[in-house]
Amino acid sequence: MQRTNCELPTSTVIVNEKKATRTIMHYRGKLQEPSLAELQAAFPDIGIFSWIHFEGRNFENLLSMIRFVHDQRKNQRPKISLECEKVRDFETLEDAIPFADVIFVSKDFARFISYRLGCYKTCFDRLYFHCRVLFRH
Image (tube, rainbow, N blue to C red; front, top):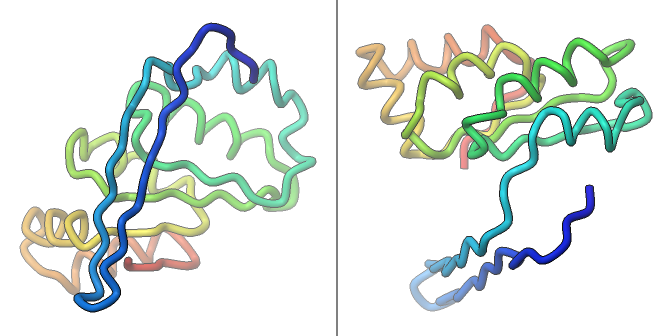
C-alpha cells in the first residue's frame, strides 16, 4: 500500500535497565489505518504469505480484514496472529479471536476479560479453545 502526503507515525522507546521498565512515546501522525479494500487490492493472493499479524487497534476494519485473510487462506496458511492489548472496543477483539491461530494477550486485556467472565482460568480456557497458541505479554 502506498500513500502520499501523509505524516508517518513515530514511536520512541525509552528503556530504564535499572528498574527494568520501558516507556513508549508515540505520535500517531495523520496516516489513516488501511481499509479492507486496500488490503484486497494490495494483496490479492494472500496465500503467498506464511504469517499475517493484526495489531488489534484498527477496530473499524479489523474484523472484516481478519475474516478476509481467514477465508482466502489455503491449507492453514498464512497463519494469523492477533494482538489483544487494548480493552476499548473489546467486542471487536472478542469477535476476531476465533479467526486467529496465535493470540498475544496483554495483562490489561487478560484482567478485563477475566473480570467480565468472573474467573481468570475461565478467561484462558475460553481463549485457548479458539486458538492453538496463546502468549501473554
